[in-house]
Length: 382
Image 1 (tube, rainbow, N blue to C red):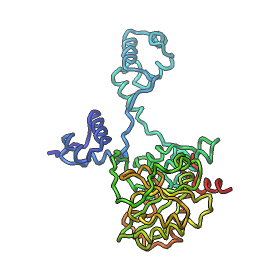
Image 2 (cartoon, one colour):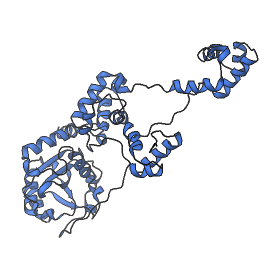
Image 3 (cartoon, helix red, strand yellow):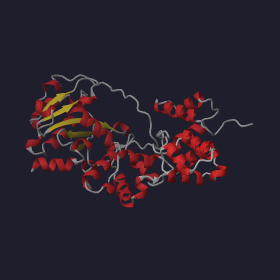
Image 4 (tube, rainbow, N blue to C red):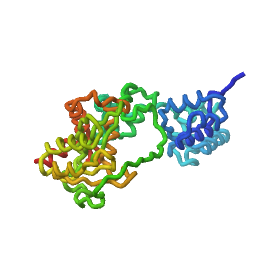
């Protein structure tokens, strides 16, 4: 007795992908489709990399079933090919090829011809990376450098503006990575994606978390307008990145250029954090020392000492409002490619952290029109 079917009807496949896009688990989808185990659903989802395939449709100029039935009736009535073509407002050569490829005048049947045409149309089309070796090499090279598909697509557009063969969308790169049947990019390259995912997952909500209160803190609402609109360089966003064994590093992101600096910390107490940040900030040119925006973490309790040492005013975000440091939050996410959760940061020297920051600063950013933060900063300092 068969315990579970391995095939799905068209309606079941539609329901499967709708449930997957809603964020349902493989087990939940299997139960909804009345499958006794989840192997079949899991196989389909993995084969397509979690990306729902586009629904099939006939080409606009293809013969329809009704037209094939007219051809069949015309043959039965003894009409010539040209007469049938005039009735259907089609070229005689179209009607001739249709009859020849489906058994000729004696064996032609409309329903069978329509079914065979639908099956013939299901021939695999080589994806863009499979057809362009040079483009494939470039994409694989940048993926190995931990560039995201969106960064690669934007960089290619800037690097090869007049060469369409060297351009590709970020979605096409994701599909080439996730969809197993394409096989144009090595599966190992998925490990270089920031999320390390093996397939496309449904988007879910993320919750923020609060911090403590700071004495005499200055609200972000009092921050200068030039910092808000990113028109002038020198306004920074900062935060702590947490690793294993209660280890931390400080991250600083310049709002105008998205240039990133990483600061090694021995401890998380306010005196240590403020001293390390002040030492790093004082290395910057004066035009890059204007303000610092931080959350309400206790590590900045001695913000007055920091301001006295650097002449940089500290502004504090509202509780549970990480979007007020959007550039820093995004950068912290990118840094997890180089410093995954569970990493012991005490093993990294300041020079190693500088090297990681350099790699990040040499990656193109969509928000900078795919210019790199390093290039943007160099332009500012000229």
